[in-house]
Length: 336
Image 1 (cartoon, rainbow, N blue to C red):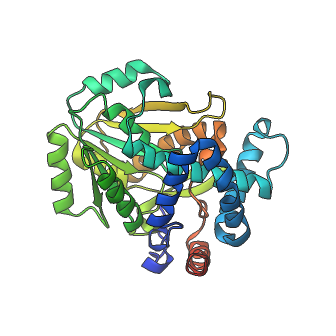
Image 2 (cartoon, rainbow, N blue to C red):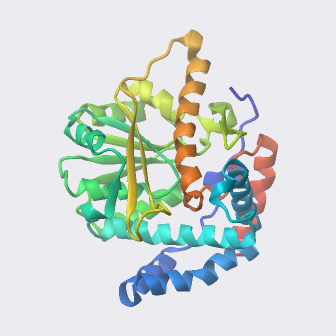
């Protein structure tokens, strides 16, 4: 397990200013509502180009990821990815922002989903036990609401580390006040938080947590995994939480697959463990194994749809480079 110094709040990705405002979101939704998706997709090209030109840290993060993908899966590419590839990458991110809003404001039709294994979905929906769902910043986890429309008795609780995500979800809850989705901003898993979540699990509710962002506590609460043939830190929080909650754990992926018909969403639920356990003596080994299992599942999907990767920071950064990388990101956000 990493034993690096804990980054301060200013150094941490969660304190970085997110691009875009509520007014900007309303404008994007306005474009789609009155001019259609094709016009929206056309208008956001200049926005994507702006990010490539003026957001150096985000651009570098995009290019690093795309180059690693190219080295791992060159068959996907017609040539080595460059700046235009990053433009397309940011464009997909803008498309995903609209999809997030639409997923909250309207029902997603069942026929819009291409489901990997419907038997796994059926088993999950029929299971009355509470579930811990580990998601990612790959694709669009809000697509889970498409299933929630069919299963009104399921309640989702989303755990977020940063205030920007919490604000976005709260805005979307105003758009659709009938949503059975609750959001909790958590800085750490203290006893009170664990007890609250345990009660929700015992009541048969679902708890969602992202497995691909370094926690506020810093790199000492991570393990090293291999992603795209390069070491990266991953949080151990989801697995410690799973042990405390003593509930079934699933992975969930929902994204626009490049080989699917336009408008279709690929959706997969992956059974992870029925009950996560480990002893003190093998704690580090087990946590590393669970984290690697998670990232290997994520890598499988990333290899098929690289433009759906929305971690626009140096995912593989060391503790020292995180500090430099994120300081620059803050400057860009404030100035841009």
